[in-house]
Length: 446
Image (tube, rainbow, N blue to C red; front, side, top):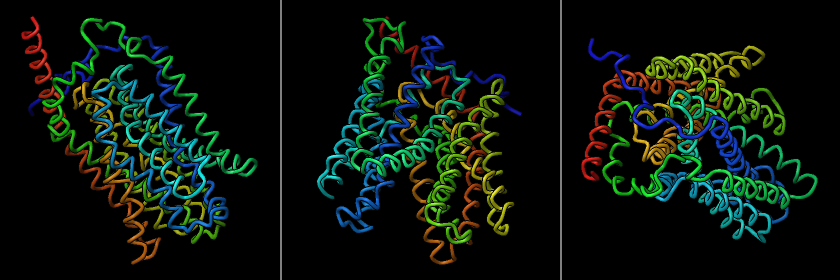
């Protein structure tokens, strides 16, 4: 039957084992995760103060929407180029700079005198946040064994959901008691404090103490090879399948996050506030599912990495079945339970997909690879999830649109199945190329 899985080199085998202690690795993760929370809290603080800004400045709904949308637009447009630059300039410095930029921009929101100044400040929030998710994952994975890649990736992606819910909740409380400017101020100072702590604790030398001081930083060595390595972002069927499958599957969380408040308002007759809180609980379930999906993938893939693909396939198919059943059921307890279960698995493929991208791309451009994955997640899933479901709702009604939405998971499962089929030969091909490149480099420098 061809290649045997046991003959496939361990995905992490082509790079040295992490050079840091287990304790320091978890410190790096904690600080990186804290900055991720700050990222999404700074992004979502605006949503809690919409009514206050509208009343004070007399803004239209379109203007309020643009203040939120400009951040997503900047992140979507700049994720790939900023991740590319971070691989060249240095991940630690890039992450610190990113956190400082979005934190200062959030503080600028606190002192904005009108719509124009607020719009400019929010633009810089998006510029600062553009590469953090992709470069942050690359940095975290570099200090942990390859066997934990899915767990850490799922936790990192799930952090976005936690940060969003936390940001909206805390900002609402702060704004209610102290005013909307303090809501932005607290989030900005929180991010700056974490950025300082990160800069002090996380350094290139501590991340790789074995590095020869005369050899230069890995990113500097990568500059010479980056042009030849960049095509490897799309060099195999399996890595393209991971990008596509991950993006398409996240169509479901994108649709649910955007339309569950309206669903609960229209079909359960909840007030706007209660519908938002209820939808927030389902968003938390999605984030928890991302973490659990990564944990399960790492557990079942401990001996055979290819099983992580199977985890992604199963989660996609489960989301198809559970969400289809949920939106086909009458309103009530059964529907809510099915919807909760479907939300839990709707984003559970994030960790396994990210782990496969890490396995199938060279470590020198992992930040760029995760930037590509983030771009696929946005363009194929999160952005069209809300927009396409909304367009379908205009024609069919919201409930019928939500009934059609889970079908995308079938296409995602197919992409993951294609990736699984080609994974073994692709991982061997990548290992052979890496070994050949290392041999040529040794011959030149000898």
